[in-house]
Length: 184
Image 1: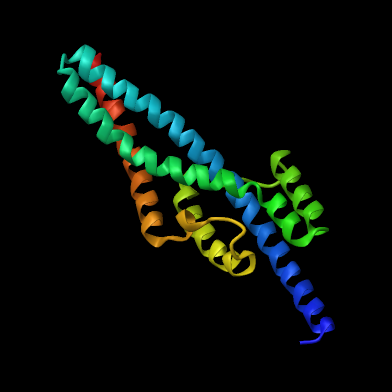
Image 2: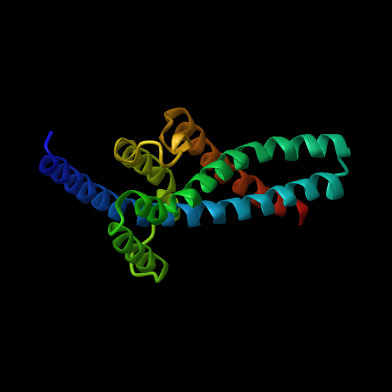
Protein backbone atom coordinates (compact mmCIF):
# COMPACT_ATOMS: atom_id res chain seq x y z
CA UNK A 1 0.00 0.00 0.00
CA UNK A 2 1.21 3.43 -0.76
CA UNK A 3 1.34 6.21 1.83
CA UNK A 4 -1.56 8.02 0.13
CA UNK A 5 -3.81 4.94 0.42
CA UNK A 6 -2.82 4.53 4.07
CA UNK A 7 -3.76 8.16 4.78
CA UNK A 8 -7.11 7.68 3.01
CA UNK A 9 -7.81 4.59 5.12
CA UNK A 10 -6.75 6.46 8.25
CA UNK A 11 -9.08 9.35 7.40
CA UNK A 12 -11.91 6.91 6.67
CA UNK A 13 -11.33 5.11 10.00
CA UNK A 14 -11.21 8.47 11.78
CA UNK A 15 -14.58 9.45 10.29
CA UNK A 16 -16.11 6.08 11.20
CA UNK A 17 -14.77 6.36 14.72
CA UNK A 18 -16.05 9.93 15.14
CA UNK A 19 -19.48 8.89 13.89
CA UNK A 20 -19.50 5.91 16.24
CA UNK A 21 -18.40 8.05 19.20
CA UNK A 22 -21.12 10.57 18.38
CA UNK A 23 -23.76 7.85 18.66
CA UNK A 24 -22.12 6.03 21.55
CA UNK A 25 -21.27 8.83 24.01
CA UNK A 26 -24.85 10.03 24.72
CA UNK A 27 -25.99 6.46 25.21
CA UNK A 28 -23.05 5.63 27.49
CA UNK A 29 -23.62 8.74 29.60
CA UNK A 30 -27.36 8.11 29.94
CA UNK A 31 -27.01 4.44 30.80
CA UNK A 32 -24.21 5.15 33.31
CA UNK A 33 -26.37 7.72 35.09
CA UNK A 34 -29.34 5.37 35.27
CA UNK A 35 -27.20 2.48 36.51
CA UNK A 36 -25.74 4.70 39.24
CA UNK A 37 -29.29 5.59 40.31
CA UNK A 38 -30.30 1.91 40.30
CA UNK A 39 -27.27 1.01 42.42
CA UNK A 40 -27.95 3.71 45.02
CA UNK A 41 -31.65 2.88 45.28
CA UNK A 42 -30.88 -0.85 45.29
CA UNK A 43 -28.48 -0.47 48.21
CA UNK A 44 -31.08 1.51 50.15
CA UNK A 45 -33.75 -1.10 49.43
CA UNK A 46 -31.50 -3.96 50.48
CA UNK A 47 -30.74 -2.03 53.66
CA UNK A 48 -34.48 -1.70 54.25
CA UNK A 49 -35.03 -5.44 53.69
CA UNK A 50 -32.19 -6.22 56.15
CA UNK A 51 -33.64 -3.81 58.70
CA UNK A 52 -37.12 -5.32 58.27
CA UNK A 53 -35.81 -8.85 58.69
CA UNK A 54 -33.53 -8.22 61.66
CA UNK A 55 -35.23 -5.47 63.65
CA UNK A 56 -38.92 -5.74 62.84
CA UNK A 57 -39.36 -9.51 62.33
CA UNK A 58 -36.48 -10.58 64.62
CA UNK A 59 -34.83 -13.00 62.21
CA UNK A 60 -31.38 -14.18 63.26
CA UNK A 61 -28.35 -12.22 62.13
CA UNK A 62 -27.14 -15.20 60.09
CA UNK A 63 -30.36 -15.50 58.10
CA UNK A 64 -30.52 -11.72 57.61
CA UNK A 65 -26.92 -11.52 56.40
CA UNK A 66 -27.45 -14.48 54.07
CA UNK A 67 -30.51 -12.90 52.47
CA UNK A 68 -28.87 -9.47 52.20
CA UNK A 69 -25.73 -11.06 50.73
CA UNK A 70 -27.74 -12.93 48.10
CA UNK A 71 -29.66 -9.76 47.27
CA UNK A 72 -26.37 -7.92 46.74
CA UNK A 73 -25.17 -10.30 43.98
CA UNK A 74 -27.26 -8.75 41.17
CA UNK A 75 -26.19 -5.30 42.31
CA UNK A 76 -22.57 -6.41 42.00
CA UNK A 77 -23.23 -7.34 38.37
CA UNK A 78 -24.82 -3.94 37.79
CA UNK A 79 -21.86 -2.30 39.55
CA UNK A 80 -19.51 -3.99 37.05
CA UNK A 81 -21.56 -2.58 34.18
CA UNK A 82 -21.59 0.89 35.75
CA UNK A 83 -17.82 0.75 36.19
CA UNK A 84 -17.35 -0.28 32.54
CA UNK A 85 -19.55 2.61 31.39
CA UNK A 86 -17.61 5.06 33.54
CA UNK A 87 -14.40 3.81 31.93
CA UNK A 88 -15.95 4.42 28.51
CA UNK A 89 -16.41 8.07 29.39
CA UNK A 90 -12.63 8.36 28.94
CA UNK A 91 -13.04 7.91 25.20
CA UNK A 92 -11.70 11.40 24.36
CA UNK A 93 -8.36 10.57 25.97
CA UNK A 94 -8.25 7.22 24.21
CA UNK A 95 -9.16 8.85 20.92
CA UNK A 96 -6.55 11.53 21.57
CA UNK A 97 -3.89 8.86 21.85
CA UNK A 98 -5.07 7.39 18.56
CA UNK A 99 -6.15 10.30 16.40
CA UNK A 100 -4.85 13.59 17.71
CA UNK A 101 -7.14 16.27 16.27
CA UNK A 102 -10.34 14.25 16.68
CA UNK A 103 -9.87 14.53 20.44
CA UNK A 104 -11.27 18.08 20.46
CA UNK A 105 -14.41 17.09 18.54
CA UNK A 106 -15.12 14.27 20.98
CA UNK A 107 -14.48 16.56 23.96
CA UNK A 108 -17.06 19.00 22.55
CA UNK A 109 -19.52 16.13 22.25
CA UNK A 110 -18.98 15.24 25.91
CA UNK A 111 -19.39 18.86 26.99
CA UNK A 112 -22.72 18.89 25.16
CA UNK A 113 -23.80 15.73 26.96
CA UNK A 114 -22.82 17.05 30.38
CA UNK A 115 -24.53 20.36 29.68
CA UNK A 116 -27.74 18.44 29.00
CA UNK A 117 -27.95 19.35 25.31
CA UNK A 118 -28.35 15.71 24.27
CA UNK A 119 -31.25 13.60 25.51
CA UNK A 120 -30.37 10.81 27.86
CA UNK A 121 -31.95 7.38 27.97
CA UNK A 122 -34.98 6.79 30.16
CA UNK A 123 -34.94 4.32 33.02
CA UNK A 124 -36.92 1.69 31.13
CA UNK A 125 -34.57 1.81 28.17
CA UNK A 126 -31.47 0.91 30.20
CA UNK A 127 -31.70 -2.78 29.32
CA UNK A 128 -32.16 -1.90 25.65
CA UNK A 129 -29.24 0.48 26.00
CA UNK A 130 -27.02 -2.36 27.25
CA UNK A 131 -27.66 -4.27 24.03
CA UNK A 132 -27.22 -1.20 21.85
CA UNK A 133 -23.92 -0.29 23.47
CA UNK A 134 -22.81 -3.89 23.13
CA UNK A 135 -23.43 -3.94 19.40
CA UNK A 136 -21.79 -0.55 18.84
CA UNK A 137 -18.78 -1.58 20.89
CA UNK A 138 -18.27 -4.67 18.76
CA UNK A 139 -17.76 -2.33 15.82
CA UNK A 140 -15.60 -0.01 17.91
CA UNK A 141 -13.42 -2.89 19.05
CA UNK A 142 -12.37 -3.44 15.43
CA UNK A 143 -11.25 0.19 15.19
CA UNK A 144 -9.74 0.64 18.63
CA UNK A 145 -7.96 -2.66 18.98
CA UNK A 146 -6.48 -3.05 22.44
CA UNK A 147 -6.80 0.56 23.62
CA UNK A 148 -9.73 -0.20 25.93
CA UNK A 149 -11.11 -3.27 27.64
CA UNK A 150 -14.79 -3.60 26.74
CA UNK A 151 -15.26 -7.31 27.35
CA UNK A 152 -17.99 -6.80 29.97
CA UNK A 153 -20.13 -4.76 27.62
CA UNK A 154 -19.62 -6.98 24.56
CA UNK A 155 -19.95 -10.42 26.16
CA UNK A 156 -23.51 -11.72 25.54
CA UNK A 157 -23.47 -13.73 28.79
CA UNK A 158 -22.70 -10.59 30.80
CA UNK A 159 -25.40 -8.68 28.90
CA UNK A 160 -27.96 -11.35 29.85
CA UNK A 161 -26.77 -11.18 33.46
CA UNK A 162 -27.17 -7.40 33.35
CA UNK A 163 -30.75 -7.61 32.10
CA UNK A 164 -31.57 -10.28 34.71
CA UNK A 165 -30.04 -8.05 37.39
CA UNK A 166 -32.22 -5.14 36.26
CA UNK A 167 -35.27 -7.42 36.49
CA UNK A 168 -34.16 -8.39 40.00
CA UNK A 169 -33.98 -4.71 40.90
CA UNK A 170 -37.61 -4.25 39.85
CA UNK A 171 -38.52 -7.32 41.94
CA UNK A 172 -36.62 -5.79 44.89
CA UNK A 173 -38.65 -2.59 44.54
CA UNK A 174 -41.92 -4.55 44.66
CA UNK A 175 -40.76 -6.61 47.67
CA UNK A 176 -39.70 -3.45 49.51
CA UNK A 177 -43.10 -1.83 48.92
CA UNK A 178 -44.85 -4.94 50.22
CA UNK A 179 -42.59 -4.94 53.29
CA UNK A 180 -43.45 -1.30 53.97
CA UNK A 181 -47.15 -2.17 53.85
CA UNK A 182 -46.61 -5.14 56.17
CA UNK A 183 -44.54 -3.07 58.60
CA UNK A 184 -47.33 -0.56 59.06
